[in-house]
Image 1 (tube, one colour):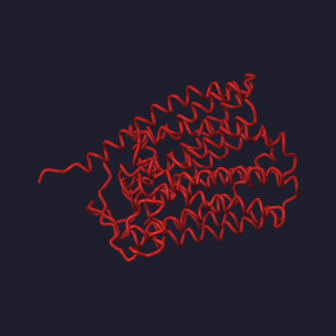
Image 2 (tube, one colour):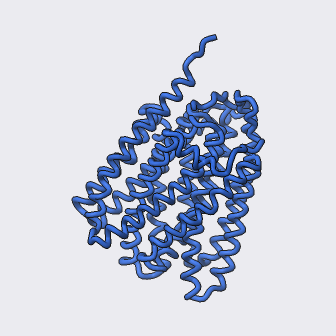
Image 3 (tube, one colour):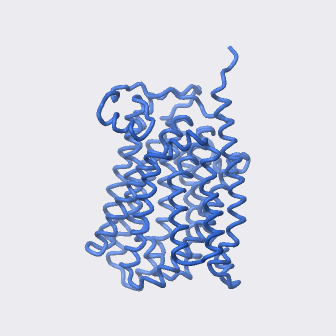
Amino acid sequence: MPSEARPALPGAAAEGGWAYRLLRRAIDVRPAEARALAWSWLYVFALFLAYYVLRPIRDELGVAGGVRNLPWLFTGTLVAMLAVNPLFAFAVRRFPRERFIAIAYRFFMLNLLLFMALLGFATPEQHVWIGRAFFIWISVFNLFVVSVFWSFVVDVFDAEQGKRLFGFLAAGATLGGIAGSSLTAGFVEHVGQTWLLLASILLLEVAVLASRRLSRISDAFARPVPGDDPHRAVGGGIFAGMTHTFRSPYLLGIAFFILFYSVTSTFLYFQQATIAEANFPSRAARTAFFADIDFWVNVLTLVFQLFLTGRLMGWLGVALTLCALPLFSVAGFAALAASPTVAVFVAVQVLRRVSNFALARPTREVLFTSVPREDRYKAKNFIDTVVYRGGDQVGSWSYAGLAALGLGMTGVAVVAVPLSVLWLGLSFWLGRRQERAEAAEAAPRPA
């Protein structure tokens, strides 16, 4: 279904202000969009700052339990995701968006308080098991909170606005990642992991505040669909996300896009864990190593998001921009197959992550502007969480199976090349489908 046309916000008070003039140097933002964009930016910045404070802690706790146990942790994550997804769909069905966002985020805040207590008083033996539970929890947490953000944003901005503005919002996520990685790397050895969890709790509350403000501002976006009130519950069934995904070729294509990305990312994640375990013996050193990688990936990503993402989407269109990540994956895995060194691995990992955050993620969100509102929340959340973690599951056990067959980095890379080629073809089809839907919506209708 083509996206509903939505005029821009009428609040042109920002026009002529110094902040707006500065922002215009980086992105093509209209005066009426400034307030909504600012609150959206604060929302995603707080989310990613909270997550990247936690991410190196998750990675260290996962490695501390042994790399050989990672497939089981991915299995546990998928099981947890399958359990949580219907609960989220129930909240979407029953509550308006500002309420179910607050409920979901505060649920995760309570979980973090529990982990603070457990990590603070656990014995070394108990710490390993708590670490495994935390690994599963954070793997569920980060997908849900980010998916909810993007569902909200594609409910506020249309496809044309998304191509101009989503790169800037992705830059907010990147800046949050830089700040979170720096915070963890700089303070983990001084204050410990437990107190960093408290910082994430406070940041999630900032995200709740920003979501409420954005919800009020978005009332100014006129929605032409009768009865489509954003302050009313979405309704529908709790399994609608899954059923709609399997019934729609377009949504199913997006699901396979996520699946290809998740499987290939899991291959690289396992190799990263092996390298860290072999080269960094202490927990603090591994945590700092993971944080440093995140920091530099985010710095490079930020440059692209601020100055290139929106322009590239405008110049190349959705289809070609969406093809960048799988194209880099084909080249990267081919390079690993030819020269499976640590330096090449790090280069491939950085290139993939930068292209994902700077190009694939904002472009992928534009795809959801062409689906009905119920699918923006339910089908999108199902794809972003269950399908994504299902890909982790496929990737983790496939990696274990390939390792059991005696395949090392070269063998895994050879397997990943044809997968990436299929992914490339799918990406082009999805992008063209979205472009046709947007063109059909923009075409003049007979009087």
